[in-house]
Image (cartoon, rainbow, N blue to C red; front, side, top):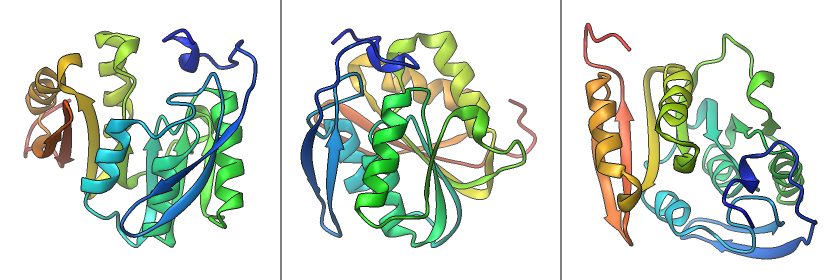
Length: 205
C-alpha cells in the first residue's frame, strides 16, 4: 500500500478485511481492519504504546481520537470513559466505516465516527489522543495540530505518540514553543509518548 493511501478520502486499493484482537490490561477488543486504512491487519506499535501509557481519560465529557483509523484508540477511550462521548475523526471514509462498525460490534455506542467537518465548531475536548499523520509533511502537520489542540478544554490533556526518527523530539520542541506544557511519559520501541497540558499563561498560538 502506498504510504499516502490512508490519507485519501476514498482509498483506491481493493478491500480485503481481516479481524484482529487488541488485548490490553483492562480490556480486550475484536477489531475489523482493511486495506487502505492505517496499520491494517495489525495494531501499530506506537498506538499500542500510547494505549498502555496514556493517562486514563476523564469519565465524562467529549473526547477526541484524531486520525482514528479503524478505531483502536477511540474504542479504548470509550471503554475507559463509559459516560463520555468519543469523537473518532478521520478523512478516510473506509476508516470511518470500520471504526463505526467496530464500535457497534463491541457495544460502544458512545463513539461517533465522523469527518473533521462534522465536529461541531463549538466542541471542546476533555482529552485528545492521536498517533498523528507525520508523513503528511511538517507544515500540514503543524496546521492540523494547531487546529485541534486549540480545542482542548481548560484542564484537558492531549496525548500524542510519534516515532523518534520521524521527529518526535523536534515536534515536542515546537509544541513547547507554542506554549504547551509537554511531558514525555514514555519512550520505547523508537517512539515517544507526549502528554500536553494547557498553554503557559499569556502564550499565544
